[in-house]
Image (cartoon, rainbow, N blue to C red; front, side, top):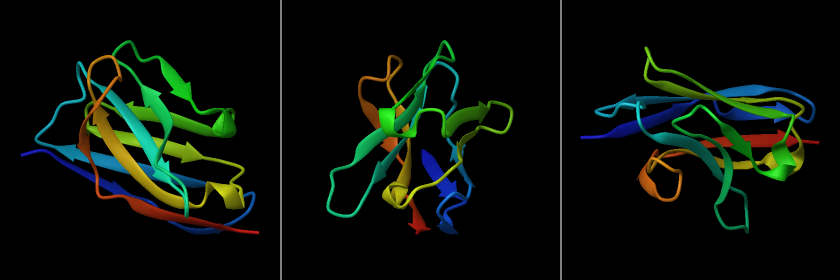
Length: 118
């Protein structure tokens, strides 16, 4: 059974940083695309960052040069380093395991809340 467990969320002031972690069990990152999504209040869930099987990363425009996705295959853990946080980054952040070419979602984590105050 696959489990994706996020941690590292919390409350921070604007300009601060957080690092989210996603520990996977029953699942190997190898050969899969991994990603982070978020759902902000009143908005649909959006893709924030992905890392594909070739280790290429992609980011939504609003987080470019502030957020960085990485993974530790030995620990089967995905990370999202979030810097220069803004109030509009507030939301629930979800880890996701995607298909090989990042085209569809195979598994979701339960989410972790990030709140950025001005």
